[in-house]
Length: 394
Ligand code: JHZ
Image 1 (spheres, rainbow, N blue to C red):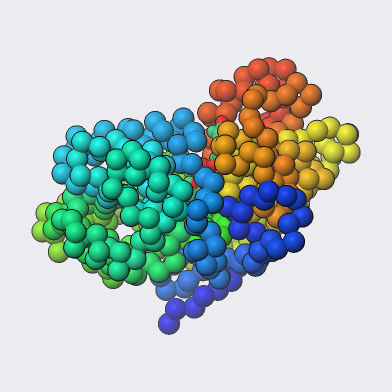
Image 2 (tube, protein in one colour; image 1 turned 180 degrees about the vertical axis):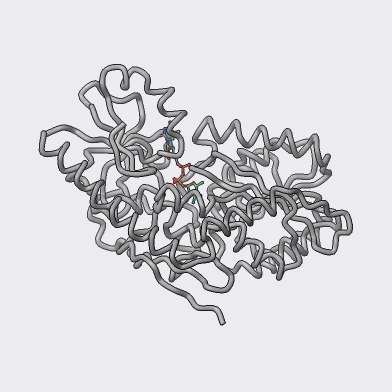
């Protein structure tokens, strides 16, 4: 029997997309963020899900093309897919601002995107976009109008959808017989290793291990045939699937290797989650200590990259406006707003001002890109504060 075991309570958390027009917004929505381990499937998820309509709507702020790193990563993957699989049709679930799917404008390319403001962007680019949630019903509607797909791709989206059985059934039903499904999401092993607990927030209903994905997708008639470990978003898995009844499946060694590594790591064992929880609590104490020490010296601290993830850290550690003067971000839809729950103003990035010596790395997953960009700040003695893999000033 499946047991759902809670292993950490990350306290009251807001909707991470809810960038506020005014601080102290009275009607701000909060929920209790607790993480649970599913004993049988080995899934790790939030204990309670937030309503999708509350999170993914017309006001969605995140733009997948906001970093050079991701633009390059998607372009490279698109080149690989075209060369290797020569698809005639492709569907992306969670097409955001088209950063990936735009590379397929010469074939039949489709997007699914429930945030209507984003769907409008890809429609304008000429991509046939369904502005709705990925469900079995929508998948039926799409394949009724069009043929089944050669490739279905989804990055940082499947982990956001609550009903996994329905999600994967719909994927299976929308692939042609030799079709390939490619999924990309943060890796649970990397999250645990790096105590990057901020990968859990309202949108991230799950953080997947390959073990859990195998258990879930097998039931939907999908077979993993390759796994790639990526550096993006602090360590992600790119997982390749075919229909289980596809007679042409060569399963790469990477699948067994990954499953064995996860077993050794203890991914199916509650012990690892208890240790993870302990590390999170230690991380919190150390973060607060670092911020207090800098603030006691009357120094400014700014935030660099008002990420959704950082919302979990800020709210869990109660790092409010008292500790962080303001955030800098390049995303126009976030500029002029306040961070959810912690009410820190977000300003337009125009370089780090000279009177700032400390910057909290909200976008720690783009550390290399940011360090390259901020050579001047680093040269004049500027320091970044990060909690990954443990709280430190770098
Ligand atoms: P980034 C979002 O999470 C939400 P977030 C979502 N749930 C998800 O899974 C991931 O994306 C993929 C800024 N920035 O990508 C831009 C700078 O200002 O880590 C962005 O606002 N300067 C769908 O928000 C933010 O940081 C820079 O030089 O955690 C990055 O957000 C760089 C590199 C970024 O995702």
